[in-house]
Structures are given as structure tokens and as C-alpha cells.
Length: 501
Image 1 (cartoon, rainbow, N blue to C red):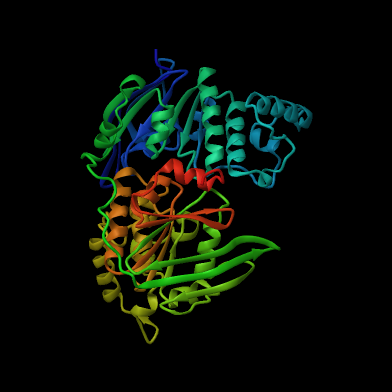
Image 2 (image 1 turned 120 degrees about the vertical axis):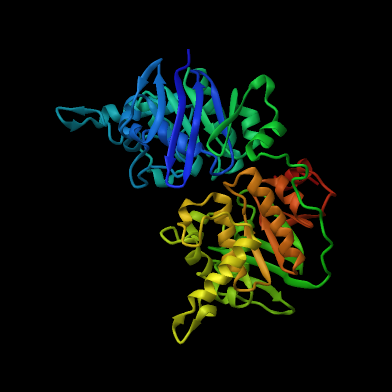
């Protein structure tokens, strides 16, 4: 008998059927993965289970232990031992680990906080999770991976029987991903039903006992561990097969656009970048590979003019000295950055698509302080067509677009300033497999137009598949250089980890 059963769930919002007659069973002691493109219905399904969308909004039934349940709020779901670990964590950074674990359901004696019991029970839960995190540690002093462990401890303190993980590895460094996977396996061993959502199909292959594929609000297919077929899962997710994930490589020019000559960046007396010499040509996609802390972020911060510290050496753009000190000076020189964290640094979330697209180029549409709205809308429409942005209208709220379309909107914002060089920092983070392929094609389309692109990704296969040339960073220095197709993941990872040739 299933622990949680969804029967013929249907939920509609104005203009869209978010879930369409979806039925899924979730078993105790199993990891059940949900796959689908952005907009497939995964988030809506989770919100129904978590009580975010009350039972009055949907048709169909939800059964827990074979009894119908009707959640009116998140509290109802939590009281039923269902907990969600969201990508954006819900911890109070200024409080201790113990206070976070029991926040909202603190042990009390005669109405007063029982600190001794709270810290003791926190220590017991953390020990169970085989972590060295101490209950008295302030959450802001923890790494992202450790904070995620605290979220799991918080769920266990509420006697969770069902735990939902929503893109849990999106912000994790590689070394903390395996720790998380071990914890999830231990939750499964204790009989907890785990619902796992990720765009990273290698994670699905590694973890899942069952897979359900959603597309356009419908449940398309189900797989068990014995018959998981990744090409079939991809095909069911996007409604077509991906014959070739990465675009065919085009030859780039020999015309050097960006050049760094023996650059060293120091911060608080420490070398963050060391003797960096590189160039990026017009029409070239230059990939930067390296582990967390290798210097990839520092390199982009230097080129974009937001670095902290001092640097020696020389930078050139179009053969002229280039020393940006602010993002605006970089943009004025034709250098733009598409940040890895689009929600924090890229999107203007209260605004619509048009406002987000024109944010960096409003001056082009202004005359005597008045915005030429028809001109701005024409240009926005042009980029919607060029980048194949899926949006109902330019007045549609940016927050309601899928991750891939949000990323395209941000890219269009900077294309409006006619850039010479684009810095792409993890451009497909949190983006589904179909949208990834579209972004890869777009990168090469822009390169074919003569734009230089420096490309960083936390997914090494992307770097090797998309770039004309790959530089490997380790310890702040360039340790190797490869042309497209001349290396493999194992070799690059070895060098990035400091154990390769």
C-alpha cells in the first residue's frame, strides 16, 4: 500500500491547466524522482502536497495511509509529517542550529523555552545524520551544504514521513553533493518516502528507485530502477529526442578581443589569481573549467570590474588597455556579465518581461528624459523572436516564466547594449534539459555573429561540449589548455583537483 497517493489531480489557473488528471503513488522507503521541463507541473504538484495550494483549488484526491486528506494550509501538511526542503532555504541565519531545528515547535516547560532539551534533542538528531555540526553554531557560519543538513534535521525534528527535495544540489559544491546523497539514502533506509526533483539527470540515475515524467501538466510515463531509460526520459520530458545535445562547432577568427597578460589578483594578502595569461577571440566560446575556489568567480569579477583587492599585470580589449572599475564602465566598453544567480542578481522580480529586458539600455530609448515606449517594445519583440523566449506577452511577470526563459530575458537585456564580450557564469543552472539545448545553440549563434564569449559552468560536460577551447583553473592559476574534442572529463577533473598531469 502506498504511503501517499495522488488520484486524478487537476488544477487550473487563468489560461493554463497546471496539472491535468495526474495520478502517482509514493512508497515508504523509496526515492521517487519527478522529471520534467520547467512548467511541466512539478512545482504545482509539490505545492499541492505541501498545502501551499489548498484543497479547494484542485479536483481529485490525495490519500495518506489510504485515507483521504484535505490540506487547507502548509501547517496541515506539516502536521501530517510532510516536509519540503526547498532550493531557497528557510533558515534564520542569525540563530543557532538548535534554534533553527526547533523553530516554531520549541520544547517548553510551563510555557517557557526548554533550552536544555532543545540542545540535547538537536545533538541527537545531528548525530543520527552523522555530521560534525554543533547545535550551538550560528547558521550563518555554516556552508550551504551544512545549512541543507540543518534543514533535513529540522524536518526530522517534526517526525517527517515524507520528505520532498526541490533541486537540492543547485547551489552545492561538488564535494558536498555526495554527502547529501548519503543522507538521502539513509532517510530511505529508515522508511521515509523521498520525493526528489532535479534537472540533473545523472542524479536521477544515481538515486531514484522510481521516476515519473511530467509534461504540460500531464503524467507522461513511469520508470522503475530496473528499467530507467535516460534517453526515453529525456524524450518524454520534452516531447522529442535530443539527437545532438551540443551544437556543431564553427571556426572562430584569429582576431583577439580580450587579452590578459600575467595578471595576479590579491585580496587580503592572498593570491586569488596567479600569473593569468589568456585571450578570447572574436566569435570564440572560451570555456573555463575548475573546482569551487579555483578562481573562476574571481576571474569574472576582475574582467567585469567588481573585484575586491589589487591586481598586477595588464588587460587589453580590442588591443587597448582595459581597466574596468565598475560594471557600468565594463558595459560602456562592451563587456557584460550574465550572473549565475539570476534570482538574486539578474531578475527584477516585481517587474514584467519588458522592464527586465530594457533595464540596461533605457538610455537608448530615451529622448529628453522621455522613454519611447513603442521603440522599446519593438526591440523587445525582436529579441523575443530571436531568442525564442516563451512568454504570453511583454507585460507578463518575469517571476512567472520558466528558468530557461528567465535566463534568455536576462541575456536579451545585455544584447541590447551591443556587447563585444559576454561573460556567462553557469548560464544553465536550474534550467531543464530542453532549454539547455536551446541556450547552447544560442551561445554559438551569438559567437557566429562575432561576439566573444567566456563560459563557466558547474557541469563539466557542458564546458567540454560547448567551448571551442577550454582552460583549466586550479589554485588561481591556469594549469592546462585544450582545444574542443581533445580531452575528457576524467583528465580535466584530475588537473582541476591538482592530481593530474
